[in-house]
Image 1 (tube, rainbow, N blue to C red):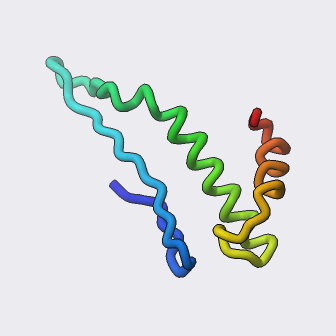
Image 2 (cartoon, one colour; image 1 turned 30 degrees about the vertical axis):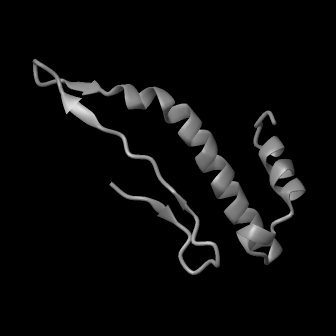
Length: 81
């Protein structure tokens, strides 16, 4: 397991989510209920990634990114805000 860490950035933001798969009675993998929240986790990850990319592009820290630039990029990727 691991996390996404913004090493070297002033905020030290961390976005993580652990997923657990347990073996079923017949040895097949059975997902735990946690996995039903994974779409939300993916959306948060996309937002964090876009924020990081916009920060690099604009020469800013994630804390100082213009939120309208992040929203514009997310819309360009098809995200409904």
